[in-house]
Image: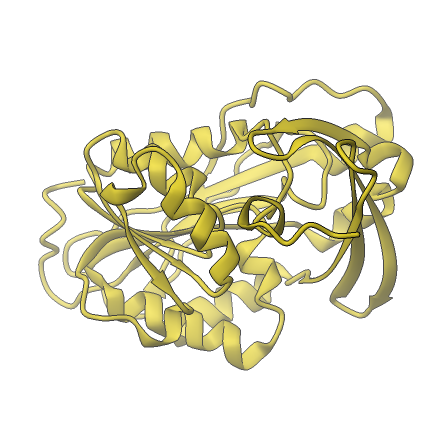
Length: 293
């Protein structure tokens, strides 16, 4: 029997180690972001970390059960929660928009992806930044998403110990579908969740960003996460994480893109984590009001 409490339905993802968010927190600080739009905020982990630092946060999430969990967390009243997606947002003039973890790749439908980029662009102030991560398809990370390599256990407040495993169920061109199985120790209940991720080539990402008026001017390394050491040659191959970052130079024109490749860091190999990560800046004609960043 599956329990239907918000705590159980809101497990997205089951990952107690969110050291992958450290790089995003550092960039929010570096960019002096005072207003952040967290697209696909899930149960609010990143949004609440930002709010705890005194940053104004809008968390957008289509899953109502996840938002129920987010609102109930300590500090939940500090965040403006919106049930929906990024295609129909109110005027925000945000300094920073984020899509952490799997969010960008989970937007697998091309129309939805373009709508998200368009909506984020409209929500950003001139010179604001969009930050997201996506895996390099050449590394074929999904080959390591086996039940044995992906096994995790975590003690979830209000739920108890939960085991999780991932298994790839299909690969169709750029689309990889996998099933996550959760086992709840309290009553032996089993919950499964099917997800599809789109692995976009770098050229596709560049073209999509340019189409919607973004520019990218730098690629950088991310700091190593707490779970970053590799245990096998295969794991090392799937854990590498180049990070892109940018700022909006004065007098930039919409759609100009300049890449500077960087080396990589290592993170734990999970379909819920790791990949490329970068920031792209909304371009602005004329001098940028980005306070010299």
